[in-house]
Length: 313
Image 1 (tube, rainbow, N blue to C red):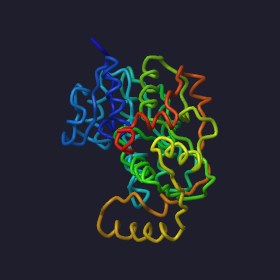
Image 2: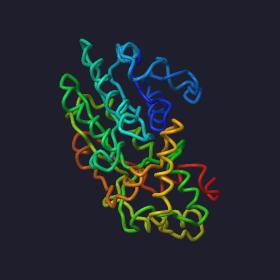
Image 3: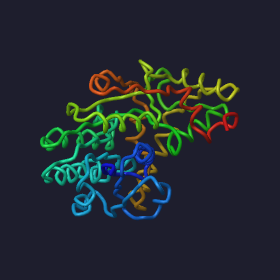
Image 4: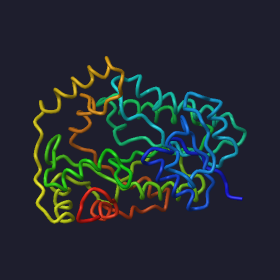
């Protein structure tokens, strides 16, 4: 009988890719979900659902019982204040670590953080991811754990990056910060493969590991527009968005969100992340402990991502 792996955030973008890869590799997947609504997207890829959330320690105990590993993909990326992010990105990690540590034979833990955690002063989200990592370092002593800091992730099912690529496919590339800013990227399939290799590898050194698609030094906007132009067969013009054109809507959005009770993506803090000039990662540390090589740099990754450029459909 195949061994069990637990997954949080299974219905999210990264979580779906991870669950499908694990199922195809022969693992039995148990997933935490707030409700069964929407779980049909993973029909056949998840063997057992546990209804609950990261504040429900009873559900977490059911999730983590008799599994060899937990892959923690759940996270909050939208909100207007620190509490909105900390409830899941910090307190959720604390609860998960506590439940796992209480087991006689604790499972291994892989936790998804974010490259923004290296600049916690930029936003509530970045600060929450950094504090989530601190929970691991300070409270997970009984566990074998790693935290991954991916950069911008794209691929099939993505709802954040693909709208930008669709706009670029029409010839317009909005630049939100400095044109010479540099950033790393990674395709979701390479992340899922890394999770699979981690499961096969046995214990590796506890720690926080960054990763990227293998392009040292990352990309700038000229690199990205050149790649999109080649793939779509048309010129792509980078257009720098004036500061006020996003700052004013971001402040209005945050004010309305507090009054109306919704969770916005565009906030003043999110703009600080978008305008940061250096989100370049490296793979040196993760490659020292895991035999993983990314297979899809941006041009190949976009070729393997449907639904954004007509010439590739």
